[in-house]
Length: 460
Image 1: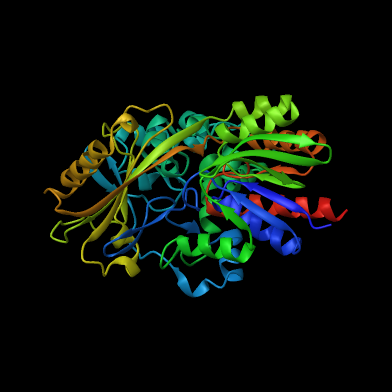
Image 2: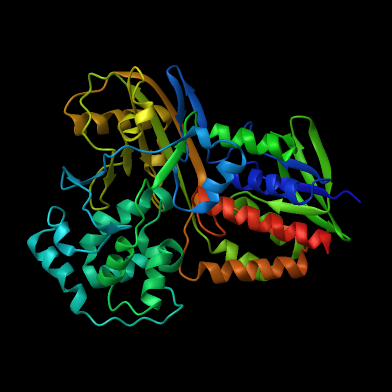
């Protein structure tokens, strides 16, 4: 019998799961249900008059194999591009300070490198980290920001760790689990590193040469289109799954869309939507007490990106972008000088710039309309560059509940969710940024692993 598979959500995770299932179960009939008018989720390549521009995720970590391997499989290697040599600056105290060398996700391997960011007293406090006794239980997990603050002082969190992580998680590091967010650091501590400085130094020494990040010339739409095409799935946009029910050994999905309401029948189901939408589908379908508690405890943040092309008369800082210290009183959290960062985009008529807004529990800025956000972005550029930009083109893209706060013990909670799903809703898998972590490689890895589990179950 040919399996029928329903994938709820046409973002990166859902499309990757559909692609992998088409490989493992080549006779499967796969349907992707996407509530919006477009595929891609947090990957969104828009068309500016001068060419494509990313309004969502911009790049992936090239040193992780998940994304690189998928790009190779899909025949997109020739489109890979890497950033130039410019590094970011940190906005603190009203000035731009180059990102210190020798840091690992904001953790210093040499405290002396932080002299431009910290006062004399703050620097002395950070330098005492190596003298503090460290209590660490191998295999354990703690809030990253709290540990760093205790050992280096709160200034290191506000001016290094939080700015580094803010663009990925949109959440303060005080709510992020060390093991999930910086797994290499946890592993170094498991191996017996005597302090955080030594652990960071070990990780910095292990860095491989070569570019850290990569993107695609032509935008992430190349990846989205290739996944949809290669999966052979029937893709239905403007199709919202409103309910999931188990009917014997199969599943019934209630769907509403432009054509009215209908029911999709499926043997296997992949749920690949943000937690606020996934949780009610799963918990009402199977009365999942553990999953309900675990998923409702995952907080999510919204964000917005203002993408601009501005006249080249504007004198941009000679940096790849700006990360904002959390003790800096400005409404934005980061600026990427996109055409400075990516050499293959630097031939456009104007400078490409992205201004990011939105942190967890800070919704006042996002309550502003698109015009107000655009004015804030233009004002931020004017303040940094010393003159107002002449804007050639602009787009605003908002992301609702798109970024999950990955707290301590997150992997244990997700393992419990999956165990309950296997027991109560066999043949249903949950994937996405709230499972194995946010970021393109993590989402790809989560989706492929879930698809392989479903294929193995069907073949048993």
